[in-house]
Image: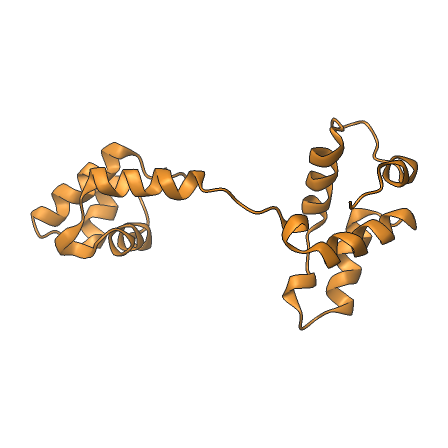
Amino acid sequence: MPGTRLSQDEREEIALGLATQRSFADIARQLDRPTSTVAREVDRNGGRRRYRATRAQRATDVRGRRPKVRRFVAERRLAREVARRLRKKHSPEQIANRLRLEHPDEPHWWVSHETIYQALYRLFGFERGHGVTVASLAQSGWPA
């Protein structure tokens, strides 16, 4: 199961392993997980002495549903610059690569082409396979 989130059952196994003084490596082997996954889970949720599976699951659920600020909402200058380049008929790939080259020491200017595509589809309701055109952007006034 590497690469997937820990389940409630796996958290119960971690709690049981900790209660019986087993090592992180031993618990991880039993779960077929990397040792670092178990160590991070325990550290993030109270440590060896205070880890509780139910509390850890609840905390994970809360962290997973927190509202996330969208990139172009938080970074309005970045949104305006991306829109300007889209109007010049640059592709999201070209924009992402160029911004990284032009701002090598400013990570807040770095954006992936996929983030640009997702923002366009979300903002304009385009379905994949239907083009986002410069005309549609100009008509929309993006970014507002």
